[in-house]
Length: 362
Ligand code: 5GP
Image (cartoon, rainbow, N blue to C red; front, side):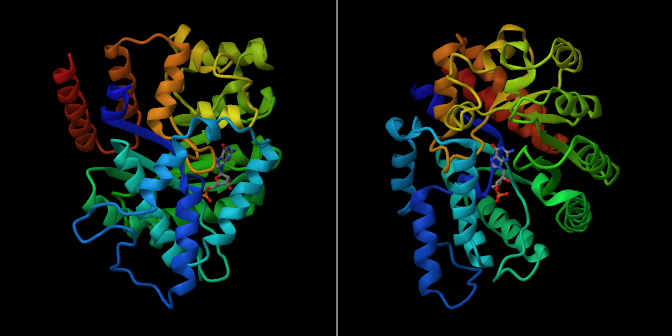
């Protein structure tokens, strides 16, 4: 248990707003209520020595509470939870505070490499999607200077908003990536799987690839083998979830054969899938099959605020159903580095950190 917490970890699938804990959301509300403007040089809730103050300590306690983490919410309730968070995050400062605190929480859990993803929104007090992304980039830049963590940003395309908006988002992402090439590295396709269709989503992914982006695409979190086949055939660098790939859970034999042939690494989010009813239990989670069939996967949080978890908790859950040696756990982390969207130099540095740490354990 201590090893899991202390080991240097890699998080490849974390939605920014979904990673905001209840406590952090309360905190942001409080600052918003008493603030009269954007204060870019302030590190809210972090003292001048970089020591984390409330609410981070509290929220980590809250997210570690197992009773809470098993509370189920339907997929629809999850979308409502995101909407509630979006109602609070209304200014560039809110976004900045959210970004910096979410990164601080990952760092506290010994995550040394983090890929955050978020969909730019134009809301009341955030004047443009560009200003949305720049507030997040500023949070990432300042957090990286403060904590021992490398952070990248994937811009999310929300399938609910249709093809036109998705193409605009990709267009804007290319402009932002040219300005911040070390931070903005990829495109994520996410959002409610009941909206959108594979034809335009594949088209948008093609456009993103032409613009030089790496792509991570959510597989449908509903039974939809045709769409899953279309996504696998396109071949994003990584896929999210994947519960419904296997015939045991509604996938077709053709889909499963394609999954095995393509071997596209899957970002597995155990708590998220259980709380939202995508998987019945840890025992029934697809990750067990991935492990058994030696298919590539990573352990991820998805939305550590909404699903009340941490990356350490996710590894603990995995270990309740899959027996792994220290070496296999280390290799999961090293594989995640290998398939991350970091630069070659960064990958080498992260690999060295992880290998050195495990030498001491062995
Ligand atoms: P944001 O993009 O606002 O930072 O993060 C929250 C958004 O990410 C949600 O509104 C939703 O569009 C997307 N998202 C978060 N978790 C999931 C998930 O488990 N599945 C899918 N398909 N989308 C998600």
